Length: 328
Image (cartoon, rainbow, N blue to C red; front, side, top):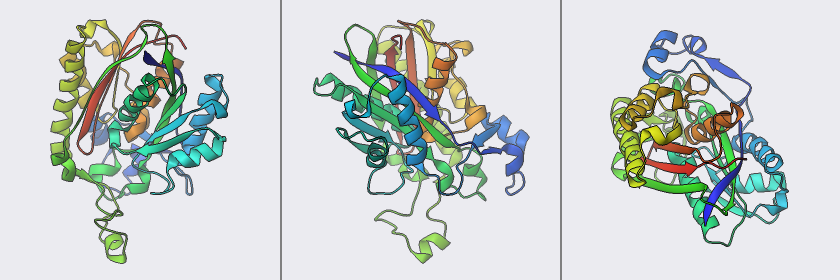
């Protein structure tokens, strides 16, 4: 038995931060950001908005679109590195907000790979036969951990997320295969140093900026190009299909150059590649589910289409999922 997606949704904050706005307080330019990343703007939460607020909007949309009630949901899995709190989980707050009284769940931390790691986890719970309806959300409020004086990070990231409902499939449509990887040797290259048990919150840790995201951008870029391209190519070969067989490639929206490199390696035509980084920037765990829902809204998918999802993120984490699409 396979697991299939039966509903999609996404939500981003209303506030827009354009490249021209960033020029006012960081050493950068609209032209430089566009040429290096492909980003034109990103959405940013207002004060007092958190991951669970955006996620609750997504969750309510999913319930409506799947034509189910909240008490039918068995589990909620949230891929995020920017939860409301370390505890309780964002999944627990969403469960409360939508009155999913029969659901249990958890947050999963895999940075930009958070959604596909969560989707694979949920898929296996469905395949066990014990669970029938699982909500999977990828959400990040990256503005909460960014130093807006750091050009290496603040120009890249935005806030937002998306999600899916997955249920059992009774035909050959659904989540066909996955390849997931992790390499902790890359951990120091993209890291949020402070706030955990290694560097607990203190006056000194706040003053020294340890609660902001840090990255070695050039090195991460090199690893991301190779990691996403390698895993995308491998899953196609593993399933005896080619880039020509893929109807839609939905890569993590980290950088337009990384997206181009992965699609070219796999032989996937540009018109089959979902790109929205120009509108949202890198929303970390939110990029793939946002793009998937936009693809549905734009009528890009039909029954039996092969869809390829691929991502690379901090950890390092990376992976790919192959789906044979079913009509929603």
